[in-house]
Image (cartoon, rainbow, N blue to C red; front, side, top):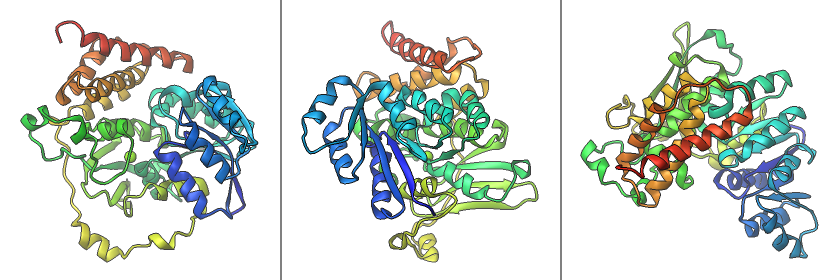
Length: 389
Ligand code: MG
């Protein structure tokens, strides 16, 4: 493949860090032209110097001084939403990896799409909350949105050389999280520490909790709907605790394709950055037979009683409009409240359901409305816990 210029937004987070490790291992194939982070300026600076990056951006203007004071960094230091957008569309990038958290990714994603720059999308919320608008905009500008999530990368790889008309069903796998075998009674007493311990993937705290509740899988179903144009009723979820099969596509002739591999986010990250080529990662090659033997691969149906957020989330996605943004806001609030010990584990689902139930459907006309609905969901959920919760 030709050398590719990459901008990474969210470079100090889990995905950003792993993306840089992929790039480090293939430094003959990539140039890092911009890095953006939240407040971890020390790590950002280390990354920028190591990869000789000409442009960096931090969330707040207050954080730029420590970087500017560091004489060893000679590049451009930006901040805020403008800085993120500049990293996305003015850094000369061929591809922008969006791995920011929360709403921050909307503006630079739009900015990159309008400039005709391809997107590698790791921030799920963007498609969940604004899928119709973002995908419509990408199509209009002839921009590709490549998935980074392992399940969507799997579906994407299975779809290679296929047409969507031939797809009968898409089946996303889910590890089932750390509480797959817990009873409803046991789930009541789960602590934040236990919920943060994901069995197979090394991830940040929010997504670890979302994986435990299966909210993450509901979000991924919505994401799959927008990425591949598959109707909701044709997307299934199957629990597969070993995380070896990353997803399946079932075609109309009865054939099923799957993508398999060790759980390692660097594989889907590398594929999104190098597509349609594959990068050489001989150190990671596995003995397929041994992989299957070692992992005793199993599948089971998700239990809606113990993991109610799967259905609650998918239903909000199907209804669309303002509800997915409300869902994301309520989920962020609920996870925050849980992590700070203010609500119990089983109250996460209860709180999100109550927030969605009290929100009337409203169609979405622009991306600007998304933040309002997200904030409304976040605040309504917090409000609900105040009186008589
Ligand atoms: Mg995933």
